[in-house]
Amino acid sequence: MSENSGTRSKVQRVIDEYELAGMGEQLEAYWTGDDEEEYSLRELADVFNRAVLRAALDRAGASPLEGEVENTHRLLTDDSVSSGVRTETRNALARDGVAVEELEDDFVTHQAIHTYLTKHRGVSYESSADETDQVEKSAETIQRLRTRTAAVTETTLENLETTDRITLGDFDVIVDVRVLCDTCGRSYTVDEILEDGGCGCPPSE
Image 1: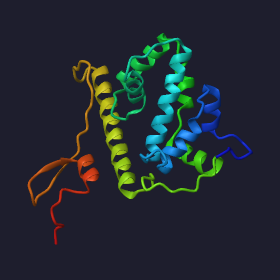
Image 2: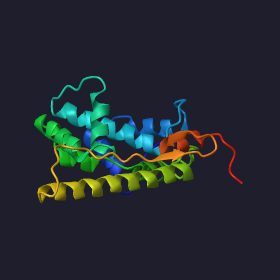
Image 3: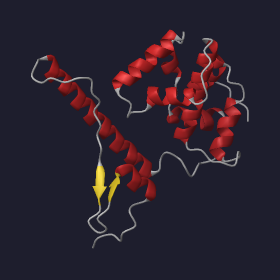
Image 4: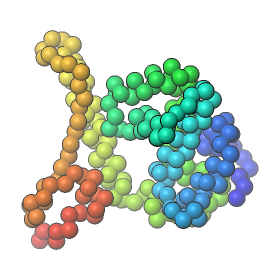
């Protein structure tokens, strides 16, 4: 399906800039399930951004090993990655000749993918894996709270260490939220509960 005329979306601009031939068709096929497997919008954003990262490395003359692009993308974007590890990853890319700030500015969100597919490619299909699903929204809310808690804790500890109120070496803050079912007595991570649709026990009266 051809692009509609008018202002280019960010997704199309990045496709053109990084010469990602066929990416528009690939995103459309993945979203509608024409390629057999149906992708969510968030998964499509990851596919797109990994392609951008690979193109940036190719331009810089780097030769990433198998799986390295996927891992580097995770270290740059995953909220669970510490700020220190993310900084190390950015520095490594810079040493390889990648303009890191420009690269990260060219990463797109799942909302941008949705806009590109529906408004610029005219795709009317609504994926059953759409990010409007309430369970996924709830998971994102919980993850934001966990990330915020970790960030506040890290800043507080660093301030206490800097002012000589505590002594502390290099550290990472891990926020682990678990759910204990009083009926079956089993403990689950929040992600497990949301992905599995609960623990299987009947709801309490």
